[in-house]
Amino acid sequence: MQEGATYAVVFSTAQHPIIYSTGYVTLPDLSATVKRVVRVATTNVPLFNVSMAGRTNITMSGGGLETDSFDSSKTNLSNNGRYSSSPGKTTTNGDVAVLYGTLDIGGHTISGDAYLGPTATFSGNGTVTGQTYHDFNSDFPDVVVPNTSGWLNAPLLGYPGIVSIGGIPTTFNYVFTNSGDYIISSMLGTG
Image (cartoon, rainbow, N blue to C red; front, top):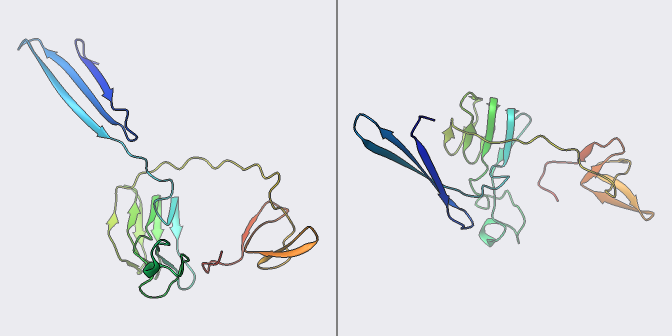
């Protein structure tokens, strides 16, 4: 910091604080003090604000992939609160984001926006119904291995996962195997 320069920071106590930082510097030749105020409005951004995000490289391959969204609170945008791919039931908030590398959508559709980091690239001949932005920035914290004690951890006997609970075979769409792998039986929107 320059000699004779000072700063002051104040912030509100609201749920989403407003921060004011004021810097002061004295210009000896003019015997004047110059100040600059920076105002920062904060918010609480949800952890998941896109349908799919990657630190590096997302490749959409396979058949019939599309990202979209729905509103479970509105009957015209859901089937009794559940997802439906029926025309008119989905919305365009199926955003996809990549911080580094490439977002390759192949011939698929993103019903929403594509967010790319400043050095990320876009490829594919699919469709992005919204905008493509090149200023995406996000923190991807390292994944911490969960403590799985007490979790359902049973041998996978078939798809979907069939496990025995209290001697009764029960079917699950999502199962941890004894190896610790997480198995998803399908990506068809089933619970």
